[in-house]
Image 1 (cartoon, rainbow, N blue to C red):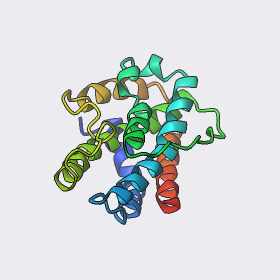
Image 2: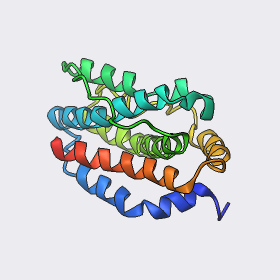
Image 3: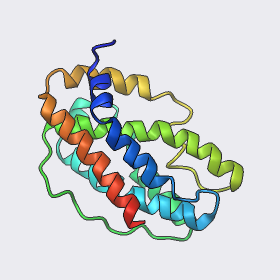
Length: 179
């Protein structure tokens, strides 16, 4: 799978991925306030992106999309922490199918990182709500996503796939800085 679209996309967005990691590294997930701020920052991205993906027909491209949604898990964790999630602004674009797949690639990649973070949060704060970070923790969802992603991405223009991924990474960086 050396020439996979995923690997091309990962290479093309590596610098942005590093910026996201750096932006979120300042959040102290070991304390409740830091964890809450982290979840709020993620909600600023996940909620509007998921809504835009759904309005644009992501379920036709990623058939198990309903099981992949995480905004409700984010809201549940925030509620458990005594915080109501803010109403987020809708995206100001009309996503193409290629953009949707690129953005979905970033959201699904963040799920992988979330599993590692869930362990860190749980160790520091037993009983902390982890619906978002541990979403689909019992079912390996990445291989199934990649299969659908690669199949759908072959049909899409590269520039649209790349734009969706870059836009989503940029949204995460902006949200992290708003803290």
